[in-house]
Image 1 (cartoon, rainbow, N blue to C red):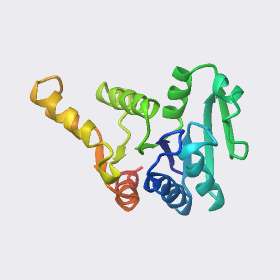
Image 2 (tube, helix red, strand yellow):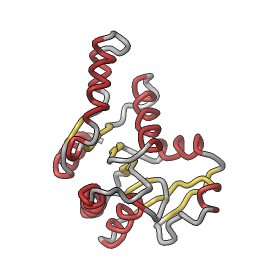
Image 3 (cartoon, rainbow, N blue to C red):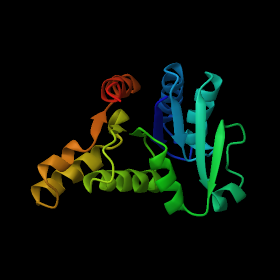
Image 4 (tube, rainbow, N blue to C red):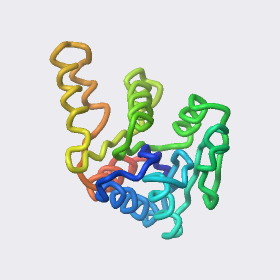
Length: 183
């Protein structure tokens, strides 16, 4: 069974399109009988993602640090929950339990997770697919930054091939179907 790690916001955004995106991804992963690995929250987009997968008989694995669990943000109904001592351990455990990574809109935490998993791939620590869902241009500034870093020679052209940019869940699932079919 394929395990898809999803990084996304723990808040509910102003634009309902992003929450709908989380629901759509949760449903699509569950429909393929794949597992979602995520941060373990019951709130915001994280909660919407997990609930959508669970409502469609999907398997959802949460990974949450003790400090966040104590704040009562842990999802109570997951297939499995791993509790870690800190964020570093959380991110390493999520990586080790996943076959691919999907980045949905989110805040600083989402960007932290994206950049860490991207850097690990750049350094050769893993070779798993990373797919960013740039719905409604949410990540356009990040794409522009990547182009600027390339033009200033801070990154190589090959670095831009370490992740894929998509605009919809359909594109994500098509990519995952192709990229993971060889495993």
